[in-house]
Image (cartoon, rainbow, N blue to C red; front, side, top):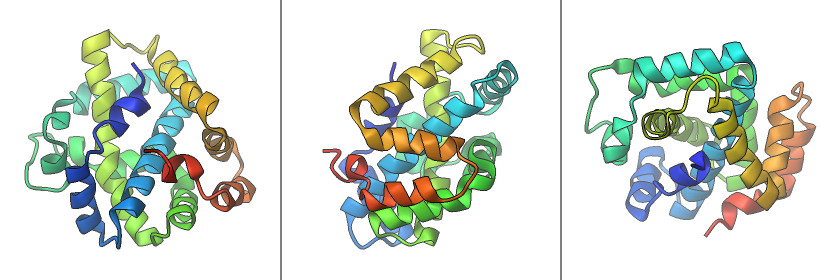
Length: 201
């Protein structure tokens, strides 16, 4: 299972339209590009977090506790608020982002904003909306493919490497998430126009 491809497959025209309205975007193309970029960034961030045994164990524990994958049955309903879950942590996008990106969240918003033309507030709102979907995909993988703390790192790294092999922009994302935050990689990605995300169709 390629987690990034699974998630991007959820970004149908209806969801993109609703997300555009949710964040006040001028065009669905901007929203689609930003959503694709956010998904790839969050999966790359999770891959980094799961690279250690402790990180992998903590991630699987969080999945078992809060993310069974059921929100994928009605992504728009759950992400945009017309449906609720019994576990409030399942849809706590802000909390999920803090765990995945930590102090890199602001720079990530800047990076994606420069690349797509959305402002950082719109990107932030979109990131909060989409973050639960990323964990839901891992919850689905855990149930369907017996993903565990021993192999979740392989699942994530395989998904990221597949994208890196196809697109050099994903390689820049990896460098960005591993960097010390000097901004240089962020500028590289923005200057390239995030071709991968903008020309995904």
